Structures are given as C-alpha cells and as structure tokens.
Length: 616
Ligand SMILES: CCCCCCCC/C=C\C/C=C/C(=O)SCCNC(=O)CCNC(=O)[C@H](O)C(C)(C)COP(=O)(O)OP(=O)(O)OC[C@H]1O[C@@H](n2cnc3c(N)ncnc32)[C@H](O)[C@@H]1OP(=O)(O)O
Ligand SMILES: Cc1cc2nc3c(=O)[nH]c(=O)nc-3n(C[C@H](O)[C@H](O)[C@H](O)COP(=O)(O)OP(=O)(O)OC[C@H]3O[C@@H](n4cnc5c(N)ncnc54)[C@H](O)[C@@H]3O)c2cc1C
Image (cartoon, rainbow, N blue to C red):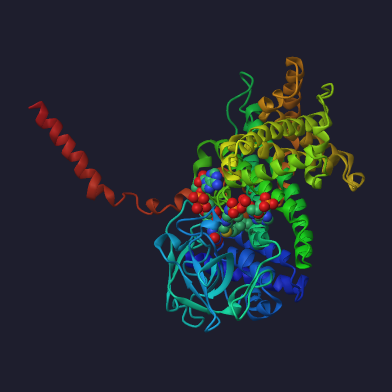
C-alpha cells in the first residue's frame, strides 16, 4: 500500500508541478501546492506520503531558515529533489514540547551539533513519510550549549543516502505499524546516535548559534511553533472537505434509496423525505459550507500574518494562534462526528467499504489528534480567553476576533428575546462570555490562592474547555452570518441563491442554539413558547432546504473518483455498483471456498457424528 501511495503521489506531484509552472511560473506561492496536496490526498484513499513534505518540511525551511539555508535546502525541497518530513513528536512526548528528549549539543571545536535520541522514549515517532519515503527531515530537539538548555531548535537532517536510500550511519529509521487509516503514509520512527550536522544545519532565521557558541535568542519564541499553525489552518480546510464529501455521498444515496411509506398505502418514499433523515443529513451539508467559509477566512489571515512575521512583525501571531487552534478543533471534531452520523444515515450499505464512508472517517478522525490534540488546544484557547478577560476587566481593547467579548461584557442583561438571527447569534456570544466570566472566577480564585498557572489551568480545565468551545461556535456562526447577511457581493447573488444561503444560516443558528441550549439557559431567560417556536422553525427550514440538498452537494463538485463511493456516484446506479463491487471480492472467485474442505466440512461432520453417538 505504501509503495502504491508513493507511486500515485509522485505522479500527482508531477502533475501539480506542471500546473504550478503554468499558473504560477517559478512563484513560491504555496497555495497551488496545497490545492495539489489536497487533490493528491483526495486521490489516494490510503493517504498521501508526501503531505508532510509539502505542508511542513518545505514551509519550515522557508519560514524558519535563513535565505542562505533556503537556497541550500529549501529550493531542492520545493523542487522535490529531496523529500522531507517534520520530526517533532516522540514516542514519549507529543503535546508537551518542553518535555521533548531529543537533544542537540553544540560542539564549538568542530562547529557542529551532535544529535541524540538518548532513550527509547526519545525516538521520533509518527512523522508522516518518515518510515520509508523521506531522505531528510526537520529534526526538532532541545538545544544545549555547554550542557545548558536553550529551548527547542530545528535542524535539517539527512537520514538516507540520496542515491541508495540506505539509512546513514547513526540513523535508525522505520515504519511505526498499521493504523486505523492513512496506511499509505508510512508514518515512521527515527533514532539518532551521536549524529553530527554542521552548525548551519540549525534553522536560524529567528534564533542563532554563533561559531563561538554564543546563543542569540528568538525575539518571539512562539514563532518556532509557526509550522504547526499553518497545518492547523490547513486541517480546518481539509476536514471541511472530508465532511462535504461524506455529505455528498449520503445526500445522493438518500434520494436514491426508498424505504418505509410515510402514509399508509403510499409507495415507499426516498429516505430523504423522512424528517429524521433530513435532520441527519442536511445540517451536515450546511456545516461543511460553514467551515469551508471559516477556513478560507483563516487562510487569508494566515497569509497576512506570515507576511508580517517575515517582516519581523509578530503582533498578529497571538490572534492567529487562537483562531487556528479553535478552528482546527471545531472542524476536526464536527467533521469526524458528522461523517459518522452520515455513515449511519446510509444504513447497512453505509458500513460497506464500497461506500467509502469508513475510509473518509479514518482520514478525518486523526485530525482531532495530530497538529495538537484537540482538548489540549481547547485549553490553549481557554488560557488565551483568561488573558483577554483580564484585558476586558482593565478596560483594554481586544483582538478583532474577540471584540464581541468586550461588547457582551458591557451588557447587564440579555435584551428582549426576538428569535431573530441577530438574537440567536448574540445568545451564543452572550453564553460564551458568561462561561468565560465563570471560568475566570474559578481560575483567578485558584491563582489568587497561590496555585501556579498550569495548576490553575488544569483544575479549571472543564470550564476553560466550555468557554473555548463556545468561543469557537461564536466565531464560526458570526463569520457565516457576516458572509450571508453583510457580504459586499450579496447583491451579485440571485434572489433564489440568497434565499438558499439564508435558509442555511437559519438552520445553522437554530442547530447551534439547540446544541448549546443548556449553556444558553444558564444566562438567558427563554420561555417554552419561544423554544417551541424555534423547534417549528427547525422543522420548517429542513423542509425548505430539502429540494436544494442535491444541488448544494453537487456544487461541491467532487468527481466520482474523489468520492470513490458506490453510494454517492453521480449517475445514481447504487445497487448496480454495490453488486459490481461485491462480485470483485476475492471470496467470490470460487463457488466453493477453500475453507470448506479444510475446516467447515470436518467441523460439521464431527458435530453430526457426535449427535449420532449421543442418540445411541
Ligand atoms: C491540504 C491540506 C492537508 C491538511 C492535513 C494535514 C496532513 C498532515 C498530517 C499530519 C501532520 C501532523 C503533524 C504534527 O502533528 S506535528 C506535531 C504537532 N504537535 C503539536 O501541535 C504540539 C501541541 N502542543 C502544544 O502546542 C504545546 O501545548 C505548546 C506548544 C503550546 C507548548 O505549551 P507550553 O510550553 O506549556 O506553553 P504555553 O501553553 O504556556 O504557551 C506559551 C506561550 O506560547 C503561545 N503559543 C503556544 N503555541 C503557540 C503557537 N502555535 N503559535 C503562537 N503562540 C503559541 C501561548 O499562547 C503562550 O503565550 P503567552 O501566554 O502569551 O505566553
Ligand atoms: C495520523 C497522525 C500523523 C501525525 N503526523 C505527525 C508528524 O508528521 N510529525 C509529528 O511531529 N507528529 C505527528 N503526529 C503526532 C501528533 O502530533 C501527536 O500524536 C499529538 O501531538 C498528540 O501527542 P501524543 O500522541 O503524545 O498524545 P499525548 O500528548 O500523550 O495526549 C494523550 C492524552 O493526554 C492528554 N493531555 C496531554 N497533555 C495534556 C494537558 N496539558 N492537559 C490536559 N490533557 C493533556 C491529551 O488531551 C490526550 O487526551 C501525528 C499523529 C497522527 C495520529
């Protein structure tokens, strides 16, 4: 599987290169490469072994290396003359980066770094493509000068000979084993023993080690985390795509499959006529659209911040970090749960490999873990919200994406309930700010009682997580509202199209309201009649969107090859394709399976003989 994936990935990368040269000749714009990576990944159901090379290795060289280091390594990496990965996680540590054990000791005598993974737990473990594909990596290690720890640093390390692909002396590298999915990616392990690299192999755009061993600290240590921020932005885009693929499959299947009359004596309807089926499928279509728009916003913000960082302006880094964390978490959680809901909506056939929903789930699910385990990132955002609440209490302005927190903090109570979109959006924001206030009371009480920040974060973790989750909901719903109601190009839309978008906004806001009704009722009084009115509107908007469901998912424009699903094929010949796939199963090559003579027949005969004996 790994070699097939590499073959496909290389073919697709070549295609990508020719597209780039045509649309972006000689340019360094990474965006076409990402689209290419997305296309490559989508075409290789077992995952793209070049993803981390494209998304992390090449970018780290460009963003963390000096111009000279880019010329020496980055250009060859961009041109796929060398293939690398990003080796940060270890067998013993993934989240707590300050606990990483791999070390780089500077030898000023030879102006080299001596790299070691001192224990088994120090081995790099997980990096994509590390097992067999890569011949280089970015090796993340704790930097030591005269045995004094200086923090994390990144090193360009060649791990295999460029001609023979043999692991170099001092390198122990291989595949970590079978996974739930993505088995074409050859995630690998890497051990280094007294492995020497020249001083100039340490990426030194932001921090330097001078020949005599003097250390020049980075102006902002967090900029070394930038490669992770980028992939978190990409995960938001990629996982909204996975959800859109699954929604397309389940929608198409739901208008082909007929089951169970709704009225006695009537013919069996398409299953999408059942209201409960609409509630399983249509909100997921809308969620895919909502996150795709949020991810596009985040990508623009990433590009602006990356340019600023390149100019040594780090001012927007904290806001990008917060948004990249919250969107990576929200998109990966909601897409993973949504794809499973869509699989269940396809009944038994949803469980068939030919439907491909299981594989889409297996591709989407690890995004809840890689690039920052989701609950750790929720806590990251919770900590940032605590800092921002202190700013609110001090009367200071907040970053734009958190401005609503200031506005809500000035409200002494929630205004008269109207049930309008603005009211629903404000209710989610108001509940978020209420949760932040409660979390801050707990957190601050702990800090005031002399608990350390990390301990206070841990013991306030549940409330911090809730506040972070509601902040994500507020941001995503607010972004969708702005795009639908206040977009500058709204007047270029046909009235029919605008109506479909407004129906999607209505569904998203009501769905989020009901999902967080408990959180909202803690801070806002809403009557039973007002809640029942929203229930009616939910049922109504599902009915309104039902005729548009297929057109919206067709607009995602996934080729049958990308969906790779007998349930979601464009021509709708589901049963024929299911049967065609079944007949291809190896067990159907013979009428009598080999195991009959070898196992089944003797087993049944033994039971028959025993039965006869027991009658005698
Ligand atoms: C086409 C699209 C395809 C997309 C699909 C992707 C395919 C590729 C598949 C897989 C690739 C996977 C790669 C990986 O998994 S790489 C390894 C990822 N590992 C992590 O993300 C580690 C997660 N751990 C953390 O983030 C840590 O908790 C930590 C780094 C935050 C460090 O924690 P700690 O030392 O405890 O520090 P603090 O929490 O106190 O933070 C310090 C300070 O720094 C700020 N900060 C933290 N992180 C960042 C950041 N990323 N950017 C900017 N700023 C950051 C934090 O807010 C604190 O700030 P302060 O309070 O103002 O001091
Ligand atoms: C498919 C896949 C691809 C990957 N690709 C790469 C790659 O290319 N390069 C790379 O370097 N890494 C890669 N990784 C590794 C990934 O980054 C780590 O798995 C991730 O950072 C989580 O770390 P961990 O696995 O050590 O889990 P841990 O950090 O051990 O987490 C285990 C549990 O402990 C909890 N926990 C940990 N710390 C805290 C805390 N402070 N507060 C509360 N709870 C906490 C977590 O929430 C989680 O529930 C990949 C992983 C996967 C699954």
